Amino acid sequence: MGEGAMRIAETFRQYSSLAPGIVGLACARAGIVVSAAGSYLNTDEGVFTDGAMALVFVFFFAMAAVLFKTRFVFQKRLINVIAHVAVALEFAGVLIMGMLRATGNCTFPSRFTLSALVSAAGMVAIAYWLRRARGASMSTAAVLVFSAIFLSEVVVFATVFLPDGVRCLAVAPLVIAQIGCIHWARHRGNASDLPTPTRADDYFAVMTTGATNRRFLAACVVGIVAVSLVIGFLRGFPDGNPVPFCMHTRIACFLLTEAACVAFVVATLRQRTRVMTVGIWVVMQFLAAFTLVLYTAFPGHLDVGAITATLLNTLMGAFAYYIVLAFMSSGWRDPFYYAITIWGTWVFSRAIGRFVLLNVMPMGHSHFTGTVISLMLLVATQVVFIKLIEVAEFAVRYGGANSIAGGRRGSLLAGGAALAANGDAADESAANNAGEPLNAVAVPGHDGNAAGVTWEDTRHETQWTGDMNAPKPSRLERLLGLDNDSAVADVQSAVMRHHAQRMGEQFLLSEREVEVLALYASGMTQKRVAEELHISQTTAHTHIGRIYTKTGLHSRQEILDYFKQYADA
Image (cartoon, rainbow, N blue to C red; front, side):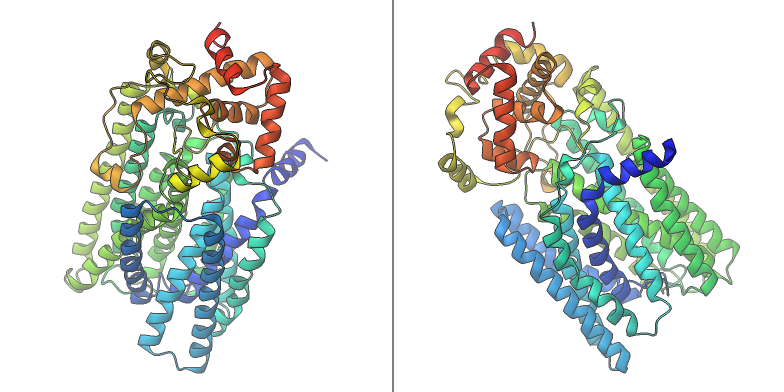
């Protein structure tokens, strides 16, 4: 076997634990696309796509408001129930729609209702699969998302050769197969445990402080809104109605979509990880401009432009999944909250673009419509890159010159703190009762200092962890659930990571042991360490035991004392 083949085989083996999540995510998405989103017959299904999803997210936004107000966090058992119910509802909706369409009895109200049901249940199922992968590295997240898109597109394309109604009936067994994937996933490793090829000098390395991290994520949401407005225009060019495909353009759209998914995965695995920060915006904006050129160049064959319009929408969907996963990994609120807010901004922005075309733009004036879209695209491009430039400037100002060095861990968003990401006060109490006291070594001491780390220590560390005078979260950042991180908490957390890395170098600790050491030394119980790293409590206990064995220390206080005396020697 050649070196290249061996490298490919090793890559497949490394990411094999993602298989249940990839298959489950693909099945959930296929059910939505085939029943309510066009499935290569048209750019979409018009009101049955954007209209049904917009209605669904009115309900979801009400749920998000409750989650925002109450700070409710779903527990594991309830999440499992929600996932099974969502899959069952998506299956029922797809199956009933298939039966009605096959018999010619699918009226407008029934189809709209079923489209809304399938969209809602499918989105919940997709959120569940992304939730399982929170904490994954940037490269792992990209592999998961684009592999699932690739697989689902194969299913969607295969169904277009079937009669109407039969398409839904054919995909229904795949939707219900998610139940098997849920049980399959329980016997595979966590996405967060996979090693990552992310480089320390990658753009994500500036995300080593929580303040910079939330700025970047907020900028991504603003970009999603701007570009999705353009997508709404393009999918219904020139009068707001779906554009039908012919066989040739249908095949071309499928092949380009699959090629794009492969290209993003390959680029990520080859450590070209900036493709998921700046690169993907360049690609999407190029596709938007090229779509407009194709529409105006072939006014009698709008399906030619519909090829890149559909590809653009698919890439935006994949990026929205990716950003949802980033929020889940970084923020402290319940992961379903982030799925609702990010997808809601995407869906509503796209629907607004469609509504403007359908109800405001003058009919039959494609040149005027094209000019408006050009203006929207120009504005979207400027908004995206101005926001990214602001993030870069913010990182330099508040991240410090050496902040890039802190990005060696290579997590999806390495600075995401979120000590409360997996529980609330009741969970804290349960953790204390289940194991050693959480305050065995209190992080804030009686004099207000971090355990084993004095204010003088944190002042010295500020030069590489970030400016303690960084601005507080903006209103948008608070609304998006990115308001958990204070500058002081960032500094204290960074100090612990820094000391753990130095101790790891001295005692040859593994990368995972260093991560466990940093969290454990900060005052977390073994249970909380396990939850934070998405590993079992037994695994966390084993790592801590190995740390004690390798270092010759016997308690958390001895670790903290060692940090204070020797870690920076």
